[in-house]
Length: 255
Image 1 (cartoon, one colour):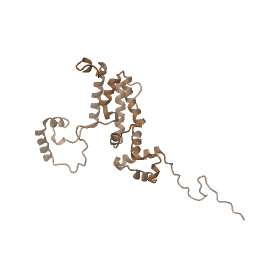
Image 2 (cartoon, rainbow, N blue to C red):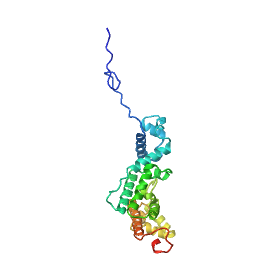
Image 3 (tube, helix red, strand yellow):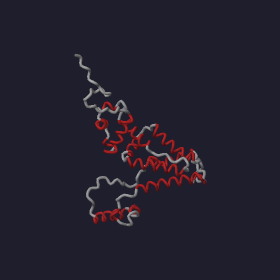
Image 4 (cartoon, helix red, strand yellow):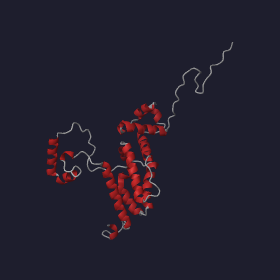
C-alpha cells in the first residue's frame, strides 16, 4: 500500500511541524538603521562591524555586501540623520525658513547625541549631505541674497547648520564624581577670579553671582538660538545694505 506523501505548508515545513521564523533579508537600509539604533544605545564608540553583526544576528562578512567599510557605514548613518531634518514651510521668509531648518537639525542631533562626532569626522560629502547644504544655501538666494554674501554667511554659520556649534566653555562635565565641597569650590573660584576677573564676571551672570553655580553649565538651547539669531540678523542687515566682499575697505557697503 502506497502511503501519501506528508503534506507541506507554504513555508516548506511538513504538516504538524512548527514553522521556522522567516529571516528578514539583509539590505543596506536595514544595516544602516541598525547601526543608528546601536549608536543611540551605546554611543559611537560602541559601533563596530562585529558588534553590529551580532546585533543583526549575522556574520560580520554579511555586512560587507552592503557597506564597504566602517567609513561608508558612518557616511550612511549620517545620511539617515540628515534625512530626519524637516524642511521649512514653503511660505516662510528666508530668515524664518533658515531658522526652522537649522533648529530642526538641532532637534534631530539632540535625539542622536553621537551624530555630532560623526558629522565632524566626515571628509566626504554624500549626495544627501550636499542636498541639505544646497537647500539651506538656496533659502538665502531665494531671499534675494547675492551669491557673494551667501558664501560668507554659510561660512559664518558653519556647523550650526547641522544643529550644533563650537562651545567656548566646556559644558560636558565628563565624569563629575562626588560633588565638591561648597566652601572649597567657592574658594577655588574666587582664586580663579583674582587672576581672570573678566571671565569670572561673565560666568557668574547666569548664576546671579553665586560662585557655587559656576561651571554647572549654561542653557545650551538658549545659547544656540541666541547665536543663530545674531548671525541671521547681521546677515539681514548686510543684505539690506547691498554688502559685497569686493567693496573697497572703509566704504559704506563693506561695513
